Length: 252
Image 1: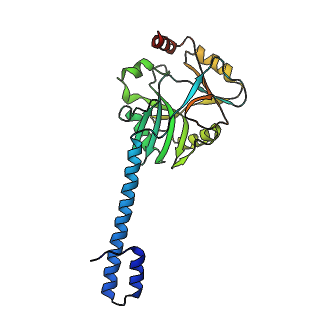
Image 2: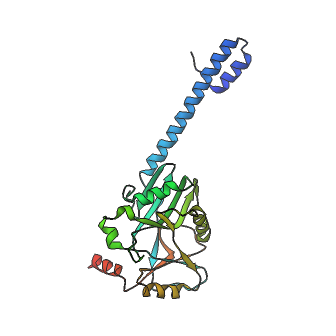
Image 3: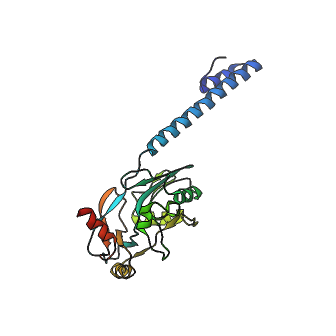
C-alpha cells in the first residue's frame, strides 16, 4: 500500500467514491501521520537529553565584600556552608550540576526525589546542598565526607525557569515570588531558603556571626540573574567561621 501525505490523502478521500479504497487511503494516511508525530517527539526528547548532559544554566557568583549593604533595595540570605547546586528537572529526569558543571545527579537522592515529587514537571532552581547537624546548622565536614549523602538537602534561593519559560530576566523579588509558589508544598529534601529585606542587613549579619553561621549573601532585589561574578550579589563572611580556615589552607 502506498503512503500519502496527510493533505493529499484528505483530497483523495474527498474525491474517491469507492468506500473500501477510501478506508485504505485513510488508514495509510493515519499511519504516516502517527509515525511522523512519533519521530518528531523522539527527535525532541533526544535533543533535550543530549543538552542535559551538560548544564544549561551557569550560576551567578557573588562578589566578596567586607560590609553588608544597608539600603532598602537589598535582600539578605543566610550563607549556608555547603555545595552550590543547579537542579534541573524535565519530566521524570533530574540533573544536579555543581558550580563547575559536574553532574552529581547520583550523589544526593533526597534532592532528586524531592524534585520529582513537585507538582511542576519542568523547572530549574539554584540553591545550596547542605547537611544539617544535630544543632540545626550546616555540617560541611560531614557533607564533604560523603558518608551522609542520603541525608543532604537543598536550600533553594532562586528559580531560573519554570515550564520552559526562562525567568532569569525577571528582577530578583519576582523570581523569589515564583520560587515560593513552586515550593509552597513542603517536601523533605528541598526547602525554601529564608531571607530578610532592607536595612536589617548589618544587624542580621551580626546575629549570624554570634550564632556561628558562615555569613550573609546580600542581593539587589531589582536585578536579573546573570551568569558569572555579579556586583549585585555580595557575600560577607563571618571571620571567625571555620570556612575561613579552609580558604587560608587553599592559598597557603
